[in-house]
Image (tube, rainbow, N blue to C red; front, side, top):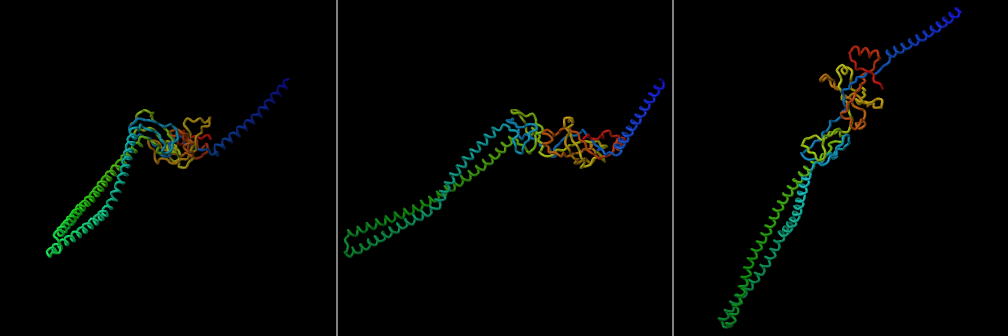
Length: 390
Protein backbone atom coordinates (compact mmCIF):
# COMPACT_ATOMS: atom_id res chain seq x y z
CA UNK A 1 0.00 0.00 0.00
CA UNK A 2 2.74 2.39 0.93
CA UNK A 3 4.74 1.53 -2.16
CA UNK A 4 1.78 2.27 -4.42
CA UNK A 5 1.37 5.68 -2.84
CA UNK A 6 5.04 6.48 -3.31
CA UNK A 7 4.87 5.41 -6.94
CA UNK A 8 1.93 7.72 -7.52
CA UNK A 9 3.68 10.64 -5.82
CA UNK A 10 6.82 10.11 -7.91
CA UNK A 11 4.68 10.04 -11.10
CA UNK A 12 3.06 13.36 -10.18
CA UNK A 13 6.41 14.96 -9.46
CA UNK A 14 7.67 13.76 -12.83
CA UNK A 15 4.70 15.33 -14.66
CA UNK A 16 5.14 18.63 -12.77
CA UNK A 17 8.80 18.79 -13.73
CA UNK A 18 7.81 18.40 -17.40
CA UNK A 19 5.43 21.37 -17.29
CA UNK A 20 8.09 23.50 -15.63
CA UNK A 21 10.34 22.91 -18.61
CA UNK A 22 7.50 23.81 -20.98
CA UNK A 23 6.71 27.08 -19.19
CA UNK A 24 10.40 27.92 -18.98
CA UNK A 25 10.76 27.42 -22.75
CA UNK A 26 7.67 29.58 -23.46
CA UNK A 27 8.98 32.36 -21.20
CA UNK A 28 12.38 32.32 -22.84
CA UNK A 29 10.76 32.43 -26.30
CA UNK A 30 8.57 35.39 -25.33
CA UNK A 31 11.47 37.24 -23.76
CA UNK A 32 13.57 36.62 -26.87
CA UNK A 33 10.74 37.82 -29.15
CA UNK A 34 10.18 40.95 -27.04
CA UNK A 35 13.88 41.67 -26.94
CA UNK A 36 14.06 41.27 -30.71
CA UNK A 37 11.06 43.52 -31.19
CA UNK A 38 12.37 46.13 -28.72
CA UNK A 39 15.80 46.10 -30.26
CA UNK A 40 15.09 45.80 -33.96
CA UNK A 41 11.47 46.89 -34.74
CA UNK A 42 11.36 50.40 -36.27
CA UNK A 43 8.28 52.16 -34.97
CA UNK A 44 7.21 55.68 -35.97
CA UNK A 45 8.04 58.47 -33.53
CA UNK A 46 5.08 60.85 -33.35
CA UNK A 47 5.10 64.48 -32.24
CA UNK A 48 1.56 65.21 -31.12
CA UNK A 49 -0.12 68.57 -30.53
CA UNK A 50 -3.69 69.31 -29.57
CA UNK A 51 -3.10 73.07 -29.78
CA UNK A 52 -4.13 73.11 -33.44
CA UNK A 53 -6.91 74.20 -35.76
CA UNK A 54 -7.77 74.09 -39.47
CA UNK A 55 -7.34 77.16 -41.62
CA UNK A 56 -7.57 77.95 -45.31
CA UNK A 57 -4.43 78.34 -47.38
CA UNK A 58 -5.76 81.74 -48.46
CA UNK A 59 -6.92 84.44 -46.07
CA UNK A 60 -10.53 84.51 -44.94
CA UNK A 61 -12.62 87.17 -46.66
CA UNK A 62 -14.89 89.23 -44.45
CA UNK A 63 -18.21 90.29 -45.99
CA UNK A 64 -18.89 93.84 -44.77
CA UNK A 65 -21.70 96.34 -45.25
CA UNK A 66 -20.75 99.24 -47.51
CA UNK A 67 -23.51 101.57 -46.32
CA UNK A 68 -25.87 101.99 -43.41
CA UNK A 69 -29.31 100.54 -43.98
CA UNK A 70 -32.00 98.03 -43.29
CA UNK A 71 -31.55 94.46 -44.48
CA UNK A 72 -34.14 93.45 -47.06
CA UNK A 73 -32.95 89.91 -47.91
CA UNK A 74 -30.16 87.64 -46.78
CA UNK A 75 -28.94 84.48 -48.49
CA UNK A 76 -26.24 83.62 -45.95
CA UNK A 77 -26.16 80.03 -44.71
CA UNK A 78 -23.31 78.57 -42.62
CA UNK A 79 -21.37 76.05 -44.69
CA UNK A 80 -23.04 77.06 -47.96
CA UNK A 81 -20.86 77.02 -51.07
CA UNK A 82 -20.85 80.32 -52.98
CA UNK A 83 -19.39 81.50 -56.26
CA UNK A 84 -17.75 84.86 -56.83
CA UNK A 85 -20.50 87.37 -57.59
CA UNK A 86 -23.32 85.47 -55.88
CA UNK A 87 -25.74 87.74 -54.04
CA UNK A 88 -25.36 87.36 -50.28
CA UNK A 89 -27.26 90.30 -48.76
CA UNK A 90 -29.63 92.95 -50.14
CA UNK A 91 -30.29 96.20 -48.29
CA UNK A 92 -33.41 98.34 -48.72
CA UNK A 93 -32.73 100.04 -52.06
CA UNK A 94 -36.12 101.58 -52.93
CA UNK A 95 -34.81 105.13 -52.71
CA UNK A 96 -31.84 104.38 -54.97
CA UNK A 97 -34.06 102.58 -57.50
CA UNK A 98 -36.49 105.53 -57.60
CA UNK A 99 -33.61 107.97 -58.12
CA UNK A 100 -32.18 105.84 -60.92
CA UNK A 101 -35.60 105.55 -62.62
CA UNK A 102 -36.08 109.33 -62.49
CA UNK A 103 -32.63 110.01 -63.93
CA UNK A 104 -33.18 107.43 -66.65
CA UNK A 105 -36.50 109.02 -67.64
CA UNK A 106 -34.98 112.51 -67.71
CA UNK A 107 -32.10 111.33 -69.83
CA UNK A 108 -34.47 109.59 -72.27
CA UNK A 109 -36.47 112.82 -72.63
CA UNK A 110 -33.27 114.77 -73.19
CA UNK A 111 -32.16 112.26 -75.82
CA UNK A 112 -35.46 112.67 -77.66
CA UNK A 113 -35.11 116.45 -77.50
CA UNK A 114 -31.61 116.16 -78.88
CA UNK A 115 -32.85 114.12 -81.85
CA UNK A 116 -35.49 116.80 -82.61
CA UNK A 117 -32.89 119.54 -82.29
CA UNK A 118 -30.51 117.72 -84.62
CA UNK A 119 -33.26 117.50 -87.23
CA UNK A 120 -33.89 121.24 -86.93
CA UNK A 121 -30.19 121.94 -87.15
CA UNK A 122 -29.90 119.89 -90.33
CA UNK A 123 -32.77 121.90 -91.87
CA UNK A 124 -31.08 125.16 -90.90
CA UNK A 125 -27.78 123.94 -92.32
CA UNK A 126 -29.55 123.15 -95.61
CA UNK A 127 -31.20 126.60 -95.61
CA UNK A 128 -27.86 128.22 -94.90
CA UNK A 129 -26.40 126.53 -97.97
CA UNK A 130 -29.49 127.11 -100.17
CA UNK A 131 -30.29 130.74 -99.27
CA UNK A 132 -27.25 132.32 -101.01
CA UNK A 133 -28.13 130.51 -104.24
CA UNK A 134 -31.75 131.67 -104.01
CA UNK A 135 -30.60 135.16 -103.18
CA UNK A 136 -28.29 135.21 -106.19
CA UNK A 137 -31.15 134.04 -108.43
CA UNK A 138 -33.51 136.69 -107.04
CA UNK A 139 -30.83 139.38 -107.40
CA UNK A 140 -30.09 138.39 -110.99
CA UNK A 141 -33.79 138.49 -111.87
CA UNK A 142 -34.26 141.85 -110.18
CA UNK A 143 -31.22 143.28 -111.94
CA UNK A 144 -32.49 142.05 -115.28
CA UNK A 145 -35.86 143.76 -114.71
CA UNK A 146 -34.16 146.99 -113.68
CA UNK A 147 -31.91 146.93 -116.77
CA UNK A 148 -34.87 146.25 -118.99
CA UNK A 149 -36.90 149.08 -117.43
CA UNK A 150 -33.92 151.42 -117.64
CA UNK A 151 -33.50 150.54 -121.31
CA UNK A 152 -37.14 151.30 -122.02
CA UNK A 153 -36.97 154.57 -120.08
CA UNK A 154 -33.83 155.71 -121.97
CA UNK A 155 -35.45 154.81 -125.26
CA UNK A 156 -38.68 156.65 -124.35
CA UNK A 157 -36.71 159.73 -123.24
CA UNK A 158 -34.76 159.68 -126.52
CA UNK A 159 -38.03 159.49 -128.47
CA UNK A 160 -39.43 162.42 -126.48
CA UNK A 161 -36.35 164.58 -127.23
CA UNK A 162 -36.50 163.75 -130.93
CA UNK A 163 -40.20 164.62 -131.06
CA UNK A 164 -39.54 168.04 -129.54
CA UNK A 165 -36.88 168.70 -132.21
CA UNK A 166 -39.27 167.67 -134.95
CA UNK A 167 -41.99 169.89 -133.45
CA UNK A 168 -39.71 172.88 -133.90
CA UNK A 169 -39.40 172.00 -137.57
CA UNK A 170 -43.16 171.52 -137.77
CA UNK A 171 -42.94 167.87 -138.55
CA UNK A 172 -44.68 166.58 -135.36
CA UNK A 173 -47.81 167.92 -133.71
CA UNK A 174 -47.74 169.23 -130.12
CA UNK A 175 -50.13 166.44 -129.04
CA UNK A 176 -47.70 163.79 -130.22
CA UNK A 177 -44.92 165.50 -128.33
CA UNK A 178 -46.96 165.54 -125.13
CA UNK A 179 -47.80 161.84 -125.53
CA UNK A 180 -44.17 160.89 -125.97
CA UNK A 181 -43.15 163.02 -122.97
CA UNK A 182 -45.78 161.28 -120.86
CA UNK A 183 -44.56 157.85 -121.96
CA UNK A 184 -40.96 158.84 -121.16
CA UNK A 185 -41.91 160.00 -117.66
CA UNK A 186 -43.90 156.77 -117.13
CA UNK A 187 -40.99 154.56 -118.20
CA UNK A 188 -38.59 156.54 -116.00
CA UNK A 189 -40.94 156.21 -113.03
CA UNK A 190 -41.21 152.45 -113.61
CA UNK A 191 -37.41 152.09 -113.87
CA UNK A 192 -36.90 154.12 -110.67
CA UNK A 193 -39.52 152.01 -108.89
CA UNK A 194 -37.82 148.76 -109.96
CA UNK A 195 -34.46 150.13 -108.86
CA UNK A 196 -35.87 151.02 -105.45
CA UNK A 197 -37.48 147.57 -105.20
CA UNK A 198 -34.13 146.00 -106.05
CA UNK A 199 -32.50 147.89 -103.19
CA UNK A 200 -35.20 146.77 -100.79
CA UNK A 201 -34.91 143.18 -102.05
CA UNK A 202 -31.15 143.17 -101.37
CA UNK A 203 -31.75 144.38 -97.85
CA UNK A 204 -34.45 141.76 -97.33
CA UNK A 205 -32.21 138.99 -98.68
CA UNK A 206 -29.43 140.05 -96.34
CA UNK A 207 -31.83 140.04 -93.39
CA UNK A 208 -33.05 136.61 -94.41
CA UNK A 209 -29.49 135.28 -94.45
CA UNK A 210 -28.84 136.85 -91.07
CA UNK A 211 -32.03 135.26 -89.68
CA UNK A 212 -30.98 131.80 -90.93
CA UNK A 213 -27.49 132.19 -89.43
CA UNK A 214 -28.98 133.43 -86.17
CA UNK A 215 -31.38 130.46 -85.99
CA UNK A 216 -28.56 128.04 -86.69
CA UNK A 217 -26.34 129.59 -83.99
CA UNK A 218 -29.24 129.39 -81.49
CA UNK A 219 -29.84 125.72 -82.38
CA UNK A 220 -26.16 124.96 -81.93
CA UNK A 221 -26.18 126.63 -78.51
CA UNK A 222 -29.28 124.66 -77.52
CA UNK A 223 -27.62 121.44 -78.73
CA UNK A 224 -24.47 122.16 -76.71
CA UNK A 225 -26.57 122.84 -73.60
CA UNK A 226 -28.56 119.66 -74.17
CA UNK A 227 -25.36 117.61 -74.62
CA UNK A 228 -24.05 119.02 -71.34
CA UNK A 229 -27.33 118.13 -69.62
CA UNK A 230 -27.23 114.58 -71.03
CA UNK A 231 -23.64 114.13 -69.85
CA UNK A 232 -24.61 115.36 -66.39
CA UNK A 233 -27.59 112.99 -66.30
CA UNK A 234 -25.38 110.12 -67.48
CA UNK A 235 -22.90 110.80 -64.69
CA UNK A 236 -25.70 111.07 -62.12
CA UNK A 237 -27.21 107.79 -63.38
CA UNK A 238 -23.81 106.06 -63.17
CA UNK A 239 -23.45 107.24 -59.59
CA UNK A 240 -27.00 106.09 -58.82
CA UNK A 241 -26.16 102.64 -60.24
CA UNK A 242 -23.01 102.58 -58.13
CA UNK A 243 -25.02 103.48 -55.04
CA UNK A 244 -27.59 100.82 -55.96
CA UNK A 245 -24.84 98.22 -56.39
CA UNK A 246 -23.52 99.05 -52.92
CA UNK A 247 -26.93 98.11 -51.52
CA UNK A 248 -26.33 94.55 -52.74
CA UNK A 249 -23.43 92.61 -51.25
CA UNK A 250 -21.99 89.82 -53.38
CA UNK A 251 -19.45 87.13 -52.65
CA UNK A 252 -15.92 88.46 -53.30
CA UNK A 253 -14.51 84.98 -53.98
CA UNK A 254 -15.66 81.42 -54.50
CA UNK A 255 -15.63 79.42 -51.30
CA UNK A 256 -17.72 78.50 -48.28
CA UNK A 257 -19.50 80.60 -45.69
CA UNK A 258 -17.93 79.57 -42.39
CA UNK A 259 -19.66 81.99 -40.05
CA UNK A 260 -22.37 84.61 -40.20
CA UNK A 261 -23.39 87.46 -37.94
CA UNK A 262 -26.87 87.86 -36.50
CA UNK A 263 -28.31 89.61 -39.55
CA UNK A 264 -31.95 89.00 -40.38
CA UNK A 265 -34.33 90.80 -42.76
CA UNK A 266 -35.53 93.99 -41.12
CA UNK A 267 -32.45 94.42 -38.92
CA UNK A 268 -30.21 97.47 -39.26
CA UNK A 269 -26.53 97.36 -40.15
CA UNK A 270 -23.91 100.09 -40.01
CA UNK A 271 -21.28 100.71 -42.67
CA UNK A 272 -18.30 98.46 -41.98
CA UNK A 273 -20.25 95.84 -40.00
CA UNK A 274 -19.05 92.31 -40.77
CA UNK A 275 -21.95 90.13 -41.83
CA UNK A 276 -20.16 86.89 -42.72
CA UNK A 277 -16.81 85.25 -43.35
CA UNK A 278 -15.94 83.26 -46.49
CA UNK A 279 -13.10 80.78 -46.79
CA UNK A 280 -11.83 80.69 -50.41
CA UNK A 281 -12.16 77.39 -52.21
CA UNK A 282 -8.97 75.36 -52.13
CA UNK A 283 -6.79 73.35 -49.79
CA UNK A 284 -6.78 73.50 -46.01
CA UNK A 285 -3.88 73.62 -43.64
CA UNK A 286 -3.50 72.62 -40.02
CA UNK A 287 -1.78 75.21 -37.83
CA UNK A 288 -0.37 73.66 -34.67
CA UNK A 289 1.79 74.83 -31.78
CA UNK A 290 4.54 72.57 -30.44
CA UNK A 291 6.86 72.97 -27.54
CA UNK A 292 10.47 73.65 -28.52
CA UNK A 293 11.51 70.26 -27.11
CA UNK A 294 9.15 68.53 -29.52
CA UNK A 295 9.84 70.64 -32.59
CA UNK A 296 13.43 71.85 -32.62
CA UNK A 297 15.66 69.31 -34.32
CA UNK A 298 12.81 66.89 -34.97
CA UNK A 299 10.10 68.45 -37.14
CA UNK A 300 11.13 69.23 -40.72
CA UNK A 301 9.19 70.33 -43.83
CA UNK A 302 8.00 67.39 -45.92
CA UNK A 303 7.42 65.01 -43.01
CA UNK A 304 4.23 62.99 -43.00
CA UNK A 305 1.48 64.06 -40.63
CA UNK A 306 -1.99 63.03 -39.63
CA UNK A 307 -4.74 65.49 -38.75
CA UNK A 308 -7.96 64.50 -37.03
CA UNK A 309 -10.72 66.44 -35.31
CA UNK A 310 -10.10 66.94 -31.61
CA UNK A 311 -13.39 65.22 -30.78
CA UNK A 312 -13.10 62.49 -33.44
CA UNK A 313 -14.39 59.05 -32.53
CA UNK A 314 -11.94 56.52 -33.92
CA UNK A 315 -14.31 53.65 -33.24
CA UNK A 316 -16.84 55.24 -35.60
CA UNK A 317 -14.28 55.65 -38.37
CA UNK A 318 -13.58 59.36 -37.81
CA UNK A 319 -9.85 59.02 -38.34
CA UNK A 320 -8.96 62.34 -40.02
CA UNK A 321 -6.89 63.33 -43.05
CA UNK A 322 -3.30 62.77 -44.23
CA UNK A 323 -1.04 65.81 -44.43
CA UNK A 324 2.58 66.91 -44.82
CA UNK A 325 4.54 69.51 -42.90
CA UNK A 326 4.71 72.67 -45.01
CA UNK A 327 6.62 75.07 -42.77
CA UNK A 328 7.53 75.88 -39.21
CA UNK A 329 8.55 79.09 -37.51
CA UNK A 330 12.33 79.60 -37.25
CA UNK A 331 12.14 80.38 -33.55
CA UNK A 332 9.61 79.96 -30.75
CA UNK A 333 7.05 82.67 -30.10
CA UNK A 334 5.46 82.94 -26.69
CA UNK A 335 7.10 79.63 -25.84
CA UNK A 336 5.64 77.72 -28.81
CA UNK A 337 6.82 76.74 -32.28
CA UNK A 338 4.22 77.28 -35.05
CA UNK A 339 4.00 74.37 -37.48
CA UNK A 340 1.83 74.40 -40.61
CA UNK A 341 0.80 71.17 -42.32
CA UNK A 342 -0.92 71.04 -45.72
CA UNK A 343 -3.78 68.59 -45.96
CA UNK A 344 -3.75 66.22 -48.92
CA UNK A 345 -7.50 66.64 -49.49
CA UNK A 346 -9.63 69.47 -50.81
CA UNK A 347 -11.35 71.73 -48.35
CA UNK A 348 -14.75 70.40 -49.32
CA UNK A 349 -13.67 66.85 -48.40
CA UNK A 350 -12.72 67.97 -44.91
CA UNK A 351 -16.26 69.12 -44.23
CA UNK A 352 -18.24 72.26 -44.96
CA UNK A 353 -17.51 73.65 -41.50
CA UNK A 354 -13.87 72.56 -41.28
CA UNK A 355 -12.44 76.07 -41.07
CA UNK A 356 -11.47 76.85 -37.47
CA UNK A 357 -12.12 73.26 -36.40
CA UNK A 358 -9.97 72.24 -33.40
CA UNK A 359 -7.81 69.32 -34.43
CA UNK A 360 -5.01 67.10 -33.20
CA UNK A 361 -1.87 67.01 -35.35
CA UNK A 362 0.48 64.04 -35.24
CA UNK A 363 3.75 64.33 -37.16
CA UNK A 364 6.02 61.39 -37.86
CA UNK A 365 9.44 62.79 -36.98
CA UNK A 366 11.32 59.57 -37.54
CA UNK A 367 11.47 55.89 -36.77
CA UNK A 368 13.25 54.16 -33.89
CA UNK A 369 13.18 50.95 -31.91
CA UNK A 370 11.13 50.89 -28.70
CA UNK A 371 14.36 50.89 -26.69
CA UNK A 372 15.60 54.00 -28.54
CA UNK A 373 12.28 55.68 -27.96
CA UNK A 374 12.37 54.93 -24.24
CA UNK A 375 15.92 56.24 -24.04
CA UNK A 376 14.87 59.38 -25.92
CA UNK A 377 11.94 59.94 -23.58
CA UNK A 378 14.14 59.50 -20.58
CA UNK A 379 16.85 61.77 -22.02
CA UNK A 380 14.59 64.65 -23.03
CA UNK A 381 12.01 64.31 -20.32
CA UNK A 382 9.24 64.49 -22.91
CA UNK A 383 6.18 62.47 -22.16
CA UNK A 384 4.33 63.28 -25.35
CA UNK A 385 6.17 60.94 -27.73
CA UNK A 386 3.87 58.12 -28.64
CA UNK A 387 3.45 55.65 -31.50
CA UNK A 388 0.41 56.33 -33.64
CA UNK A 389 -2.06 53.48 -33.91
CA UNK A 390 -2.72 52.97 -37.63
